Amino acid sequence: MKNAYVATPSIQQGAGLTYIKALGGVLCEALVQLEEIAMINLAKQKTSLLKRLSELDSRLHAIEAELEAPHSKDWEELAVEREGDEVLEQLGQSGQDEILRIRAALKRLRDGEYGICVRCGDDIAAERLNILPDAPLCNECATAVAG
Image (cartoon, rainbow, N blue to C red; front, top):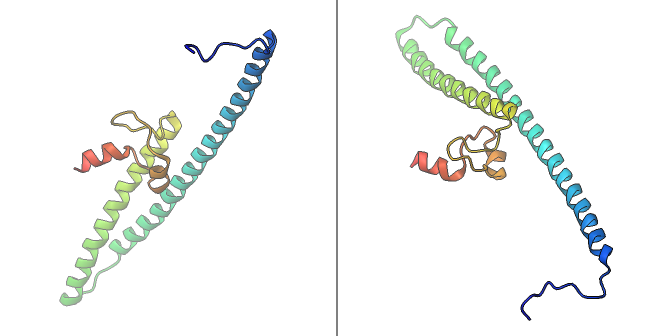
């Protein structure tokens, strides 16, 4: 048998069209549900990003306050405090870097580009975004850049 898709005489002319319309309706409903899930996930990601941004803001204010605190006049204590200040400055810098990444992710959300790799244009895996909501790169590009 060459063509396995030949219509059989038992199918009425309009029955196939009705079936296709019904199937189309089911597919449309499924697409609407997928869009709703995607919107919920985007809202969840946005909430997660905004929460982390707030946490970083609080942490950076605490670091700034600690760095501005008066230092001891004792030389030994001052040396220990300066080492602590260096650690705090590094923590502050990493926090500022993360804030920049989060703001960029929020911009991608606003622009409708969230979840799309900024390097190759492929989709970023949902699992990756769940772990790193501010991820701008897909797994392959992130590996290549780190590489």
